[in-house]
Amino acid sequence: MSEASNPKERKTEDGSADGEAASTPLVRAPLRGEVSRRGFFSVLGAGWAVFTAASAGLLGAMGRFMFPNVLYEPPQQFKAGFPEEFAVGEVDLRFKAAYGVWIVRESDGFYALSTTCTHLGCTPNWLSADQKFKCPCHGSGFERSGVNIEGPAPRPLERYRIALASDGQIEIDKNTKFQEEKGQWSMDGAFLYYS
Ligand code: FES
Image (cartoon, rainbow, N blue to C red):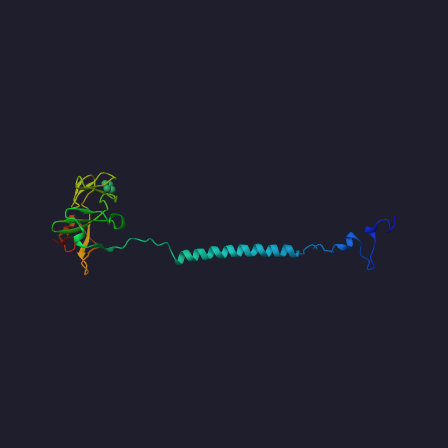
């Protein structure tokens, strides 16, 4: 077959193939042991991705070490308002959820009871009709004073320090506890005289 009958086989002046073959740039296949440019960059990209992920993991671990989980507890000291805001003979429930404290107003003063059951630590409820605290877990009961009267609770509820602040408000300090079975309810701070 002649050159004229098959244009694809025609040669140009510089000797390369004419037509379709001539318009396609020649790309040399990588030799054995050579890495193509595309392959090189994909390997480089994968390497960076692994490096970035490892660095991020390391930074995260360092962050957790430097800023450990912190458990935020309610303040141990708080002001509860002025004495006139409390009704005589009432158990004030306003500070139970936020501070774990009941403030009891008697005719001659105040005391602050812990809302933690002395059996296994559940939170009793104040039953106004029965004038007692009743624990929902195992049935312990406590008088309004905090003395245990029924169920497995081995001792009375604890009281917290209570005093008048300089601005005239009632101030509770949970850092100081008073336990009846240790004779501490008669100590300064266990009862705030006010009439
Ligand atoms: S925890 Fe209150 S009775 Fe058991």
